[in-house]
Image: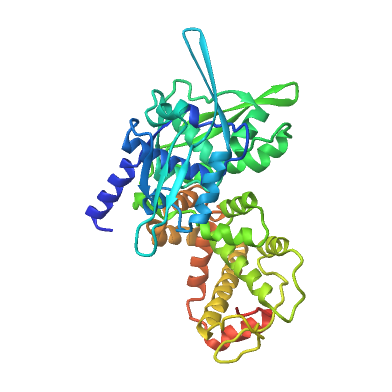
Length: 451
């Protein structure tokens, strides 16, 4: 990357700083539910509102600019509307005290929103309002935390996004300790849910806290968080976090953060299978995107098959396919090199030979990656170390920042970096390109449906 381009991108990343009111960081919704995508969207709207000024009662922006600031990959306004409704349906409470006086406000997260779609060839715009009672405190806060949108958008789970903002808030405080609250309070804050009344702390720690801490540690170069448990007897009743600053790591390509966008279209396709939107977003946040796409394509092929029984639950079938990585899943044969074995629905658009060949190649590459993983596990320690060192020398500078950070911390054990490493190892172990015959034999042996 040319130095001038890198410098310009770094300046852009630095410029996209949000002054987020401290009260708006650890939001505990009283009604409705917040999701990672609605939180991203909320931050992006607030960033642009602050640029336009507190004196404006209504804010207007080109829809494309908002999508870019929120790091989405979709221009589907219906998906955006869904998350805007989430914010409008979420009730929050603000409490302040001054000179012995108390003030309590219950309000929605965002007010009226309008999306103008003037037609083909003309830009769409979005206008929005904030409730009058809290508008000034949001747009021009007295006490706030400076948050970089690019870094905030790196987080792939709601809990990690909250933890990032909490860490940024308390990084400069004297004790670097967050608030100390009971586990039910934290469960609501870290999941964005308003319906939590009771919590089994063991599951909260295992399924939410530990995963989010690991994600934050892998993606954030400024700090990590340490969990502090406060017990009464043997029961954990309250928790808090301590912020631990990190030594800055310069990996080159500092603005690779912009590459980690959240694919709304992909999440939408998961919901079409019957997954709840919250579940689809959670799966997206915790799964390698390449594996997710492969599993989704596999299920879509299965749904189109006329030779197999109708799926009773595409959502359950998808989860099973994702878990097994196609292990034991048998389908009809593909078409490669002009050989076709798949019946087509009368109303289904014909699939090209090239599309089928690319699909089989993807599965073949994935199979080689799994073989490389197994081969690596059988190697001696010295041989494993040599491959890790070579990978670092050849590929580290090219990796996106979160993947590079994850590799430096955990190596092949990292969920984020593992697939990149093993694909590289497979390519170096078997550099020859497969012929059409090799791919066809592979497809027939696995019983994989082409498209």
